[in-house]
Length: 65
Image 1 (cartoon, rainbow, N blue to C red):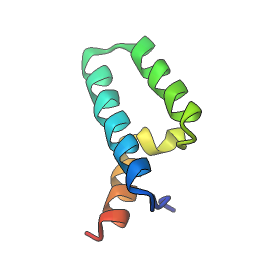
Image 2: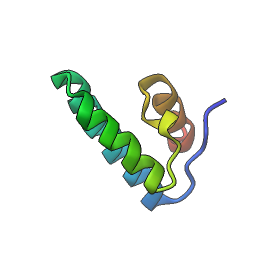
Image 3: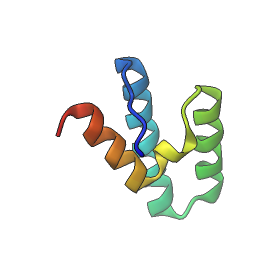
Image 4: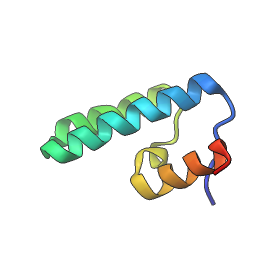
């Protein structure tokens, strides 16, 4: 089940992390990916929201698509 993100600030943080995660994946940068997971945990964001399928489902659920 997808997690919903109610707080606009939290949603913006997740979107930023997702974008940076996609860039790190595209470059094959494992260190950057680890750092982004650590950042997510520090910010109180579930790391699974950074994964594409779960993140897209959560985004669709919160945006009302």
